Length: 311
Image 1 (cartoon, rainbow, N blue to C red):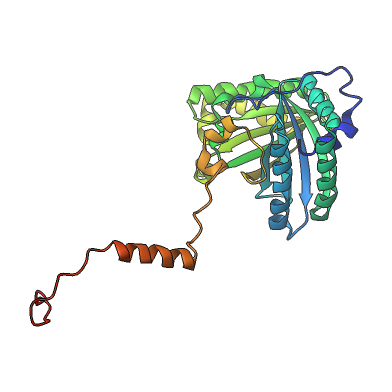
Image 2: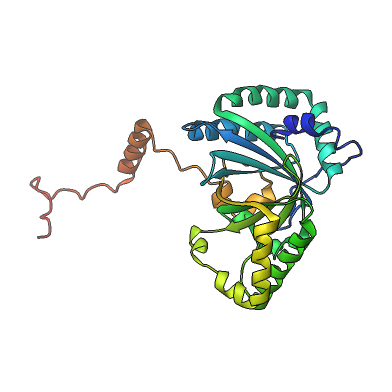
């Protein structure tokens, strides 16, 4: 699968006891337990050609009938980046995928060749490994990423020694959302490799940017209560190192998704190519056939005169 060769080199020590890879992408909407994320910094002005080249990785995976799939997203804010998100059921599943890739010599050689060529479009890359935090997520099973068009990714870095407080504050926020009956959802992942300790990623899926026009802040604060609002603000000032939110667009061309995933929104993930225009020769042949099929004109009357036309 795409980018796994880089991840193997960076994290082989971490995965010493892992086995068993995903046979299929999890069902759309079910948050996977482990995510591997490869972030590419795309060169300015190279976005279009980079997208076109990335389809080669998709074709290579499809040709190999590789069972592990990945989702590609491209940044609409912040740095020019492309993220490739691969879901796994466990770390054991990830290592099995790595080993299977290494054993497939033809597939590995093709990935290595493509990776070398891909370097012409990127400045840098970073691999991240994150685990699902169900206790910090909110209705994540209803996000419907397979039917979404955008992902908002909020990166939160908690100061060392303040993680327990962070969890407490997030649970207060979740309770307030329940009380206010707000139709939001997010999936929280804690980064365990590839970023400073205390890094959390919050993913929110959107079908339309119009969803970002709705501000639930007031309703949540009212449900939370003045005392908890003050408590959260105090912690944010003292316990949070930084918060950054960025918007990404899902890229069907750069993604390698399962048939089940694509079936949730086929017009987006696997759009049918428009029928090509008919060649002139074909049009001429078709026109001649239609002309031959026309009924014969009425016979002329005696004297060689045709019937008078209706006025």
